[in-house]
Image (cartoon, rainbow, N blue to C red; front, side, top):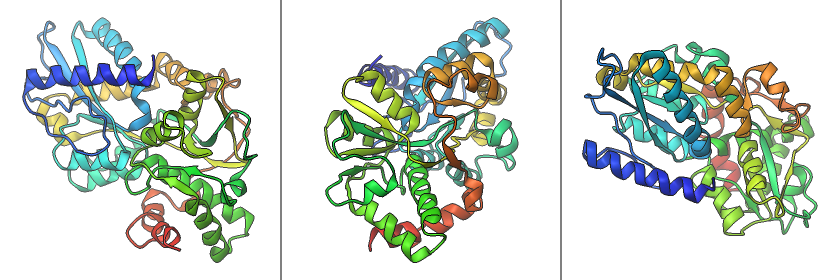
Length: 359
């Protein structure tokens, strides 16, 4: 199903939820919200099997298609297990913006965001209990991705690696790290490449990455917005993208785009967590945990692969070797000292991103 069709269905669902539950609190901007739910009357612990349970999942931009399908298989699983009906309300937007919306009152029961730091911000606001990162397997990341380049068919500018993004006349599309988790992964992948290229010479590294960002022609607030700018609006020569976004674009437009895997990329870990404050209030704590745990099931892992996310289950990942380049050199967030350090070093005000962007 095309993105526009999914978005129309999501908007329609959001309108229905709003009529049923009243005005919902959300965040503005490029969020693509389909509703923000979270009514205390929807209890996940009720003994009434005929009751319809509701759950709100606040997610980031590129997961729209995956969760549209996952919510259906989870509802079927939960119905068979408990006899209860589950309806999941989705909200999508830039990961950083989505995190702020939860802090400001969006009553998410669970968050499935692009990077752990965004969830840490919600924890620091007192809405998520400490220790969430180890609550589920693999740093609470049931699927992963990497960062690749999407170019137009024929690759007229000959883009093969990060060096080519610094060349004069190459128009780059990438979202803003201040609002997009995917954009943070993009930046770190480029920085790690520069680190290896210049043997840790920070001045040369900053100059290199600055040249990439001087070539950015549009900087959207979220990854899906950046994809729309490149794919549907025809701007730029190359999109720095989540691997899953690039593969989805090629699936939808097979004769128009090509994927380029750089020599060095990063293992991107989109994390998930229960928003304990809201789940306790809404009576959805048990349901929320079941919802996130089922992401690790074989059925959900295969679905993730079909939606171009890398399953965390290595055996299932291996079955998608024709889809993913499993030999690419991937750094990890640990190479940057973890997300707390990485965010402080690169993305807080006046940190390295601001410095190189203003060079």
